[in-house]
Length: 344
Image 1 (cartoon, one colour):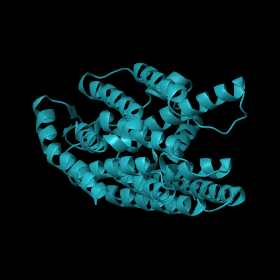
Image 2: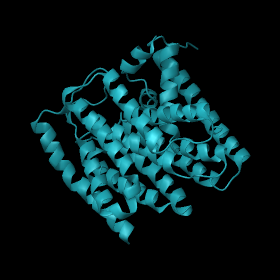
Image 3: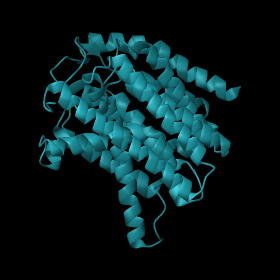
């Protein structure tokens, strides 16, 4: 009951504060304007992510006794949110944002938590730090890229957090369960204003903050004793943003849209997973629901894998990779046919 109360508080704080932030964003002209690389047709207020952050912060403070050990993650998420907020208000260069994220991720990986599966040695430690930094920064930005259709990022986060919470509860990792439930409540409080014909957007402040927090939960969770299973579970749960980032990068290189890392970093276009689905004929709401079901399916697989051994985890991950490969081929072929590239 106490956990439900905290969930309710985070939900209500976000739900009640979102209209206030919408008015504030409108008054201060903190808006996402329409453009050739965007789907929405009218100027839409940002700052929705700040409302979600307040919901998380409220629940965190109410559970401070249980969540005190996670304070460093909250601080990191706060800094990420502030950087995103400044970007929403005045605009920051992609390079500056990346450098800030790299510094935060490096601090987390050295002093708080890091992926642990390499041999205990200097090079093993350095390798784990590098992989952890890539994981945090990659998912932080992958979730930012996922925020391209109404309700997609916040709704996907709810599914991700629910799957994390189920596994964490089953393994008695109650502090992380509470954190996941608090953020889930905050995201649910935001969705009524963002789902279909959004009245307000997350903004970079919200999408990067959510991505960072999900990446951190994945790192902090003790998912299994076996290293293969330990890695497989968070990769499955966060499979959609990972696939989107990998698929988009491959297609941009293949189509020579980017030639250098800096070009990739600064490039923005309607070429993500959800954009392909819309281009193929799905309505935006249909594309969102389609991705919800994929996310849920992967999450269910992750829950099942928690009771398996390395070979089952490897096979499940291979299956997910094949499915995403099939989806990628169908999307590319469908887009070529739709655009008249492929002929008969």
